Amino acid sequence: MANIDPLESQISADLLVVGGGTAGMTSAIETAETGKKAILIEKLPSLGGRVVTIYQYFPKLCPPTCGVEINLRRIRSNPNIRVLTLAEVESISGTPGDFEVKIKLSPRYVNEKCTCCGDCEKVCELERDNDLNYGLNKTKAIYLPHLMAYPPRYVIDPEFVKDESMKKVVEACPYDAIELDMEPVTITAKVGGIVWATGWKPYDATKIENLGFGKIKNVVTNVIMERLAADNGPTEGKIVRPSDQKEVTSVGFVQCAGSRDENHLPYCSAICCMASMKEATYVRAQYPDAEVHIFYIDIRSPGRLEDFYVKMQEDEKFHFHRGKVAKITENPENGNVILEAENTLTGEIIKTEVDMAVLATGMVPNTVDDAPPLDTPLDDFGFIAPDTTNGIVGAGVAARPYDVSATVQDATGAALKALNIGTRR
Image (cartoon, rainbow, N blue to C red; front, side, top):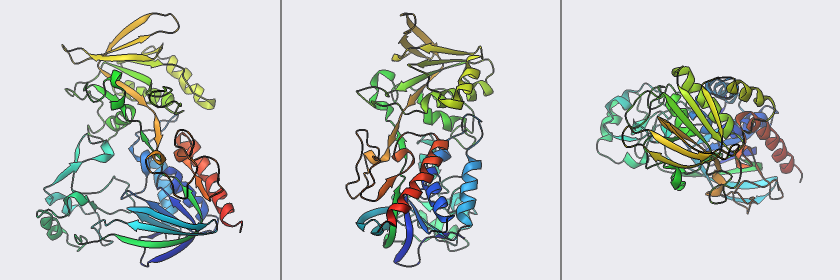
């Protein structure tokens, strides 16, 4: 069985994997299943990464829980994997094959005795923004990160740990699992190779002022749309517009919101077209008579995904407009949003009024704000460059924009490459 949390101050493995999302879990699993040892660290309280916030994969439109569950089962059953959550790299020294890594473990304030019974949560009086749902609702200050959380253990938001009312939470736990006096710990890991799989974040849509996000209530982003459709989302899976919880009769999807734009993200994130078409199926499933408008520069549906695009075109309720939305305004009479764009096929300026607009924002690698150590080379956009001379190998969206399937393939290759680099000496 995989080890959770270190009991010693120094540990060792063939490979260190930084980031516990799809890429990180894949790299660790593939390493362990070759008989090598892997340490998998994640700065959040649970594994899963961005994919656990998604409602469905494309093109099969199945929930991500199946893929996550399979990965977690493989991790739980493999003694070659050591999982450290709330863990961050402080420093890396040494050379490929002989790295020494300092890892800081932040306190969870809940120990291994936790059974997830929920008694603590019931009595907790404090609330925090739910980051799983992008702050659209609240959780208690002591919370389970999500239904498939691994490790399956509650965690306390450090902002509230010193509040007097948290004593009630301690008293409510029948297993003595809550320790409000936990302190950070730093451990040392000796490893041969390193995979950096820290994933991505959505581009900040408030920077795209002409599209109104943050100012117009019924303008949301693609990642928020995933949570609106999810059963464990802020609306329990009911797609309603934020301003008045009204059922939608029309939705506009705005492609390349900030992407392929020299003022924001110059590159294409590769997945946004398919993600928007997938999210459009969420709308049509709940509201069979709803009209869907998709505004695009180019529809990018490579390979087998082209069939999905063709199927969407056959639906008379889907309307594809070739033109980038230049402006979004609000109709003050009914709260609807008005999308203005030039149809580049006809040259016509069109205005389309819908109940709600969804911005397809791009993927920004977390390496932009938190670059890997050892002067790891990054490209012009902040992705880890395919230069592995320093021994750190990028995986998944830390290396380039990928969908989930491609991420799995890339992470497998990254693990093999890092292991090879680590044994060249």
